[in-house]
Length: 123
Image (cartoon, rainbow, N blue to C red):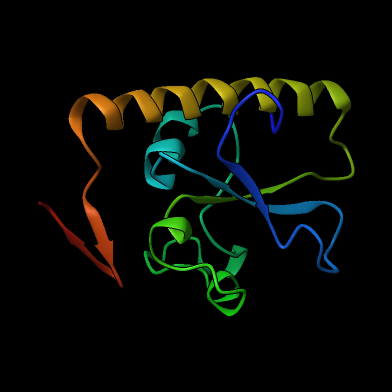
């Protein structure tokens, strides 16, 4: 996925972290859009497992200096003990399609509603 699309960053890539969890920023998207597109295909979230219903950016991302738009363009991806390489490949394909669709949406219709803290603001 990193080689197939520009503007994808693994947050904390060089920091010590658990090998089965990644937080990834997808430039030109909105994580909410990606969640909506992928809700029937992947179990992903925008924050830590204990804050899945919270609209504020992850406190972990904030501590890493990732804020504002980048925080709202980020998803937490994880794999489990039963995840196969085929599962990862299929998830990568779904993510690739979702990122392209979200970016196209933003180019055609403009950005999604803006999030400021826990409030949604329509421009």
